[in-house]
Length: 446
Image (cartoon, rainbow, N blue to C red; front, side, top):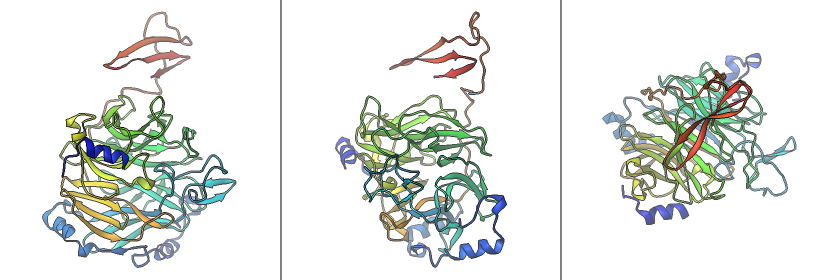
């Protein structure tokens, strides 16, 4: 890999048919018939695993840890900004026809219809359809630590919102975790089996556009105790757990900075505290999305989208070494030419990703071999988010620093419940902000 110096970094900157409610559960025969409509012979692409020399080598030398299946999604490719692929537009007249998919219930909708959640055997090339929905949508599969179940986001056909679901890797025991009038997606497990995810529950729209804002939330593994982790006025997206337990994510810095230029990597503790820069915040013009840790290296890989980002997060696959410094241009190295999305690191020398032709395997030298080819463009069915199905170690579990349920206990004599008084101050190198105050009868952390 060639080190990305300032000029290169600058160029990057420029440059289910299955109903999920128990009261309407389908019979086993109906499920079988639904899946039969979307089999390995009818999925919109061609499997090419047997033609991949790289993949055969990985299977032989243990790179895949003895595993040989991946999970991925099919859905209609988004047509708008990287964040414009869910929910609806706030207005009709200013939105060009080429951006939205349909008008229904008096609103313009940003999602396409049709998709599936699938498995691909990397040795045999067999595609197994776990769920299929001709009018629904699937996205963001995430494999549990034990390798036995998958967390994903699903919008059932005939509905407008994505919600979080789990399913066993054999397609059994489908269950819904969230519901309501807002979209929930980009969910990942935390080491205590709680879940951090992205949601439109803040009920905000992008300040300079017509689509919904999504920020970070956390909940228990059964879908209870949903509460916010971030309160950004714009998007916080694509969270993932780092080995030390921090959550890495993309934060859109908007207020007092720029409408379009600052979408960089931040981290937070598992309870939302300790939000801080991870990489790139002093370099305008790149949206750094889908960051994930590369096992055993202390580095991450992300999709560096040029300027204000591209549909479905297509960008330059870039490896970041945070040890070089949070803004050091030499800390970022582009892995491969061309634009890809959904990077998934297996080792420092083995990655899954999706390019325009389809799903690919990529080695540490930037060599590419496509293992699933299809035509990918706006308005067409494309594949997304390949993840290796395997058990993996849990990240470090953080002790909570905040608890939204805590009531005021009288931190100082004379402070009665119902009064507002600043009682704590945190001073850092660049800031001095209140972190604890009493408002009414509840304790609030700032």
